[in-house]
Image 1 (cartoon, rainbow, N blue to C red):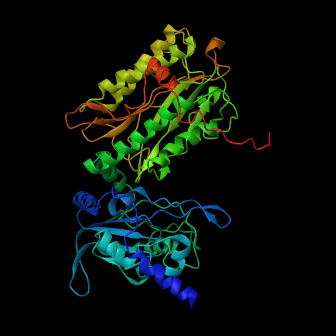
Image 2 (image 1 turned 120 degrees about the vertical axis):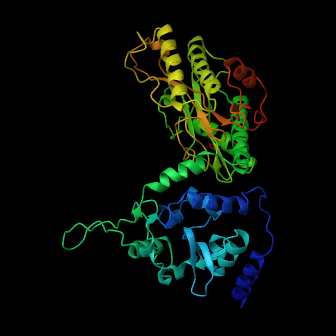
Length: 483
């Protein structure tokens, strides 16, 4: 009786208001995005989106669930085991009701919710997310959508990496399996070794283009969340600048950054944090962050971004451990800064992305020649091995087009120079790695607006920030060895 009462109380408590942030994307935003997609769908078509899969971490522990960005973009739904269908033209239900979108979601389950958290359920999705046709995901199997009547069925192809939760009918595995059956999706092999024909109405390419068009231009609601994610990330960078001391570990530096993220309500990191001291900074996506002690002779490259309500920042600063740059460190740092500053100024609506990329590369290569690191700008090298930037949004490398800059685009500008130990140049440059990465918005005026302005970029401004006292100066933990 006690257990039953507990379940009832939990179920009733779900309906009550809970203390959650009030600045999530609105249901109107998601509804408008669905309408924007419908306007770009070809005639007599349907677009199908599946929720992200749950991922196993180890044994009976899963990774913290993160929704598929496209699914979240169109629904605001943050739970697994769901499928969304958006139709170009109105569809008719058996009772004559017209509809143009339908979603199948996890049902309420008070017993499971006691263990794994609240669910919206059918009614919650209908009322809170403002989607009219909502069904229990277990009903998808027998809903019998006639996919043959559509000229195009648009979806993202499958990676066949979804586990079957045999205790949960209607899970993502079941939804995908039923969809494949309904659309006659070709299997990878069949008994008679003949190749199955692919139905002509299956389209796994067009959504990539459509979503790049939609997600590459941010709405005011999205810009507000991205601006906050960037602000959080820059303040975290500042706090590390003030707190950094020789002898800290890379993991400790990472921890300071991510504490600030949480302090401001960031749910996640937008990507695995990169904290590379010295030569480790030459590994572009270094995420081990296990160096036990950073040296006063080194710089630390810190590439971290807070994710706030789904939207990820991406900010990189490179700072000297001792608080001031050496002559060689400053020379490389200022060269990267000059390239970045020129590229940001050139990022004007109508300008080609390629133009700014080539501009930054030209400045860096000429600077390396002037420093005697390269013999000529044409000398093959890997000191600047990556591009200049990318869109940010619901993905840290967000969907978007890379032709010309347009108002509403939010992107990074991130030139860098990396000189690993053993490079074919004077060894005084070895182990120097610098990347400066900032987030830029093309405003309605067509001009670039720096969103990450709170974190200093100039070398002298970084030194001034590092000279300031830190709130962590007196934060000392007990010695684990008992000394």
